[in-house]
Image (tube, helix red, strand yellow):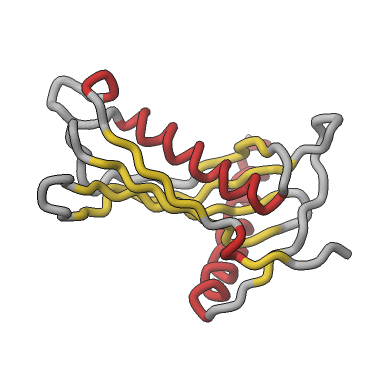
Length: 160
């Protein structure tokens, strides 16, 4: 069995300045752009844990709580919450920051599932996760509950 890897080794932080080409006619970042940045941030955290390529399997509900305006910074943070056999759940939080005042507002968060791939592009086992803090342990427990719900939903969709 592989040696467990701490959550901290997967953690990433990414900052993106919102430019006019990434915004709608209201001067705020397109939701699809924020979804793309979320997917990339999640993939980076998953790759750090797996130390190999990963593909997105699912993105749980993503609700926009606040816009990110042109000229503001999008702050993305991501970490692996739980590891299963070949898949991982990654939590991503997106906030906006006004570069003039430093004021931050939560934009959205999401839970993404990634599968690690081997050289043959087939799923490969990933190292277990070492949740060290109480917060990391809670996130891991919550991720296992969400996984069960995702698996039940997938089974129901296949049967429909």
